[in-house]
Image (cartoon, rainbow, N blue to C red; front, side):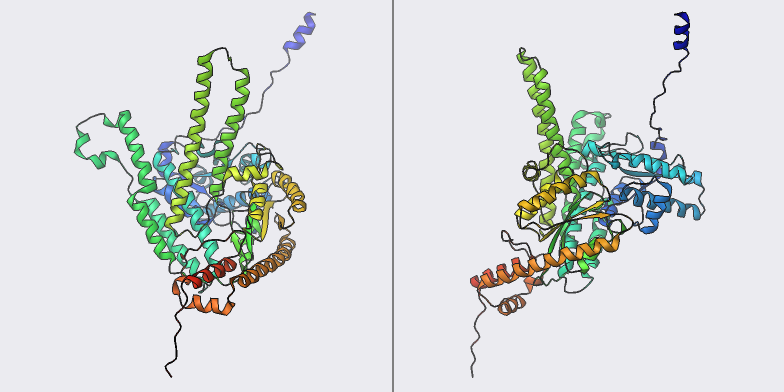
Length: 564
């Protein structure tokens, strides 16, 4: 027995694996450290960079990724990873190697640069991105390079946990403006470009709009209550630490970012810029709704075969999905998880104690109220930006409506990727008649998107008017993917033409008469000219002929009689 005990004592202790700790980003390194990020649209990246620079940080956006980045990522990462992982890490490594070629040592790069990216612990390869980035950096000779994460599961309360990057009110509200304005401007570009009379004019105007907004986000002085009140507070030595001052100062900052005079002025100037674009809204184009995995449906480059430019070249109008839809999804999911958790906790709560029950209900409703308040503030600010920029972009779709449509087919509590959103969007845009084709883009082997695709194909048998195409992207297979898109686009183009001819017939006017009437009213060519959308009519041209015909009935052209 004694020998057995001695053997057990000699068994070494189990050492569990722990994620290697990154060297922290300290506040003292702020002035000498450059933050790198990328992977979004160039509008979002410019706005986020302006916010970071306005808060005193040094930052750079990674150049657009291409096939060279893909090959570089595959060289240094494990096999079988997602497209976003290969392209993103390849873009980062290429940038670091370029810095090294310019004369910077590896240690200087490791000490003076860091990379910020999204992270998650979800049920797909996305949860492995961080470890892949660290592995690739180590394999490329940049071991110890810092990678900071915004955790997806924390939603708007994401934090790196490092004191060097502080989430102040100005930083948070600036980021809010960067995301919302990036969404609206990006949507406007895709809505105007297919119909522009002067090729390239939309890109030219959007570039000026982005530059104006970037200057506003970077250079506008921050609101400080002490500066507004002047000498009234200088006599109080510790007024900055007083709670009432901090609350009032925070409210002032929020109002200044959301409704301040500088914010209203820059959007008014941008609206005037957009009016320089003239449109021909009689062009019949199929409307393609883009959905899919977050990165694949957002990036503009080789990561999705340059699909957006290809679709526009083929004569389509794109409905791109805003980042704000994902933000609202996170808020909605947080509310739903809280409601489920509260039901479980209520089952174990001591109902014999009235005070305990009342306290439990109060805590639940307080948290739900805060989430609802965040949703309403975000949605209101988004709509204010839409109105200020001419209501060209589309409003956010209700998360409750998407969940209601999707839940019978895809449980809204299922996590991973876009969750139930892909199914909900397909049903919403098809049943509402808002598009002629739903195009889902995802990396090869994407588990959440594969699950939703299985549901989509079942729904096609139920919704006979549903046009759906799923595209898997990888470094190869571009020709095959684009060929499939062309075939689906041919059917969508036929639907758009049939819809247009049907609408022209219902007007009771010849098409030439409608065009002549529109030509005699220059306001119809204005990019910000607003007209209602008819239910079940997706195409711009079809909606426009219906609107012009209604105007013709109310305000016919005067008949000019000959004096001969």
